[in-house]
Image (cartoon, rainbow, N blue to C red; front, side, top):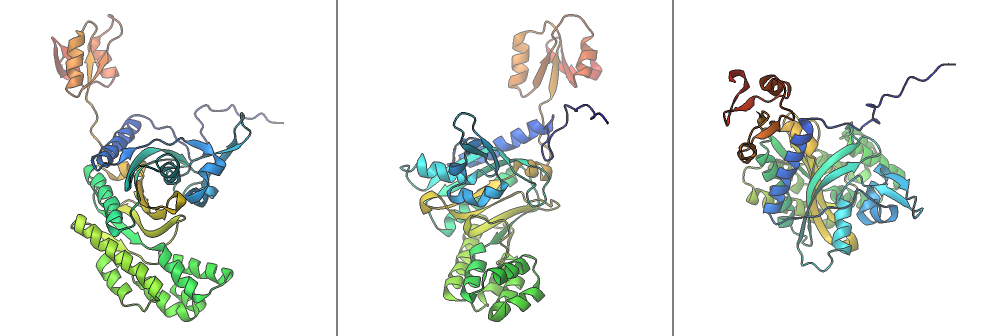
Length: 383
C-alpha cells in the first residue's frame, strides 16, 4: 500500500493557467485597447454571463458548439447549465430577446473568458479570452468589410506586423456537393479529402464533380489570383452566386482598407460550424495560431449577422510588449499630493507602510527604478 503524494495547491487542471504579472496586466490593457477601437466605430458593449441554462446557450447558433461545452447542474433548479465556449451565440440571443426593437443595423461589442471542453484545434488552453464585434441586420458585402476593417485597425493599433486575412465561403463547398447527390458516407470522405487538400482522394470520390473540385483546390492564395481562378471554373448558378458574393466582399474590403493583405481559399471549411456566408481567419507573420476568426451567420430568428472574434491572449504574443507604468517608491512621509501628481503623470506609486527601514533598499526590493527625494522622482541608483 502506498500513500498518494500531498496535493500541490499550485496544481491546476490541464489547459488552465494563472496569469501572473506582467502578463495579466498586459492582456487586460490589450483588451481595453480593442474595446476602445470597437467603441470608436459605434459598437456598444454588452456583457453576457459566463454560465447559462443549457437549453438557452445551446439553442440556435449555440447548437454548433455543444461538443465544446462544459455542463453542470444548478443545485437550486436542478436544471442543467453550461459554461460558454464561444460568445457569439450569446450575442445572437441578446439581439433577439433583449434588443429586438433596437433599430438595425445593431452593433455590439464584447470581451470575456470562455471555457472549452478540450484544446481547440491544437491549442493548449481550455480557458481562452475573446474580444469581438457583431453587426446584426444587414446582409451586404459592405457589412462584412466593416468587420474586417475594424479588426485590421485593432491589430494596427497594437502594432501587430505581417497581418493577413484569409477569406473563405464554407457554403460554396456544401452547395456544390449538394448538386452532386453524394450520400452521407461518400460525402464525409470527400469533405475530409478537401479538408486535407488531397487531390488524389478527391479524384477517386468526386465522381463527375471531381474536375471542378480539384480546380477549386488550386483556386487558393492571394485574393486576386484566387478569384480569377474561381471565376474561370464552370459552376452551377447557385454556387456561382456564392463565388460572386465572395468576390464582392473582397472588393468592399479593399475599398475600405487599401493595401490590406487578403487571401482566398474557396474550399476551406474547418471549424465553421454555424457560419453561412463569407468567413475570415486572421493571421500574423511568425504566429502559428489564429489571431481571430469570424464571418457571416444567421442570428436567432434567422436574422442576418456577421462578426469577428479576436483572441487577445494570442494577439499579445504577436504584438510588441505594451509599455508598463514606471514604478516610483514613496518613502514614509511623502505628501499625498506628491503621489497624486506622479500618478496623474502616468507613474505607478508604491508607498512605504512604516517609518523604519532603508528607503532605497526597499525601493530596490519592490522593483521601483525611481523614488521620491525632496519632492522629486529620481533614479534609485542616484538617490
